Image (cartoon, rainbow, N blue to C red):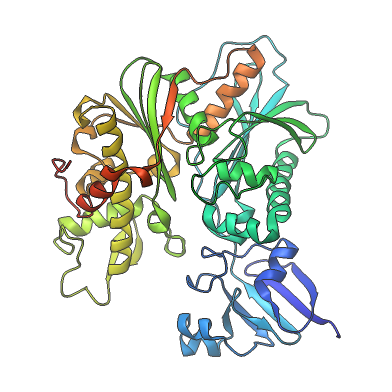
Amino acid sequence: MSQRQLVIRRENEDSESRLSFSMEESLLLLCQQAGISIETPCNGKGICGKCRVQFLKGAPLPQPAERRSLTPDELRQGIRLACAVKLTGDCEVLLPKEKKPDAVTGLFEVGWKDLGSDCAECFLVADIGTTTVVVEKRRKCDGAVIDVYKGVNAQRAYGADVLSRMEAVLSGNAQQLSRMIKGQLSEAVQQLTTSHEKVDFMVIAANTTMVHLLMEYDVTGLSRAPFKPETLDEITTEIAGIRTYVMPGISAFVGGDIVAGLHAVEFVKGGSIRNLFIDLGTNAELVLYENDRGICCATAAGPAFDGDAGTGFFGSDMIALLAKLMNEGIVDEMGTLDEAHFEKGVAVSQQNKTMHISQKQIRNLQLAKAAVRGGIEVLLKKANLCADQIERVYLAGGFGYYLDVHAAIKIGLLPKELENKTISCGNGALLGAAVYGYKIMTGENRSLPMSLQAINLAEEELFAENYVNYMNLTENTDRTP
């Protein structure tokens, strides 16, 4: 069969890619195989409608999924869904410009006493998140940050969440996913270092699934109950020619990124008070600990906190906007828009930006906040504590960095008793990876200073009850069954 030609251009870029293909091939699959990034939050199932591209030449007839997601006018303009379209002849496609990562670095100062090493020597720390990849170059002598690389995780081409990527691995794409992330790390190393520079080692913090994808481990045990990972131990390997330490995890749901965050707060703040560590994102990890013991869990928040990158709203902006709508009486405690906005939604402006919020988005946000709040309440119950007995709350990650705590309490995401006890620690994974690197250099014990019991919320009857009880948007905390 004769080969057809596909020309791919990226919006606001001069370069182009040329690929050959046979008839009836998937545009998304061709791009994935060529390492060309297209956002596919639903992993190509044709249900999210976000993998939109524009055919400049040779637009094929629309598929049923495209007719459901796109307007007639969009279809006439050559707009198609990369996951649904089947290429039938020579064509030229315009991809949307790549989104810049919304990734934060650390807020705490984790510098250590001068180790007496050459300050020209450095090491790298990396946070492989589901959405972003951030790599810092730090001086060995005092831990100071010299340079930073930030990028969107290249594996997003296979879905926005860990479940989608595990499905991709189980479908035979394990090697490709591993190659993508290792290639991105190599790109970061190339950008951050020079040929004559000595990079002693690299430390990687990542959730358990990201570690499995990096190392090309079997994810079958992670994908179904009882959710057993291949390993939770520290891994020593080599990436981009650099000796690399992958930090250990706690469970299938609480990984090395959370271990890193705990290393960071204990190194910087320490103490024996009761702490609640919260890392909010597509998956929310929660750790409640005191002295040398604690309990932890994870809960699926989904993409509800993601916002709308097209309008410049991200993550925690959604919490602030929802609280604003409640204050204005447009949304009630049941999460229902008033009659004037129920069908078409409401446009909300903040800092010269406007976002349209629908009733469906509010419902999704309610589900996410109920899952997080329900998880917090389960940990409190198991520790036989009340919220007012928590002395310090650490909010980690980009979401925690930007979170308006008052707004979070207004919608019931956090207990009111925690309002004046919260500390944002930025990217706790990067900070903790730096502390881990310090312990490697000094030969100190790299284990956490506390033992943690991991629980699966799906097996907790109390979580199901709390999930329902905290669905409404309310500051009332007296709801524990």
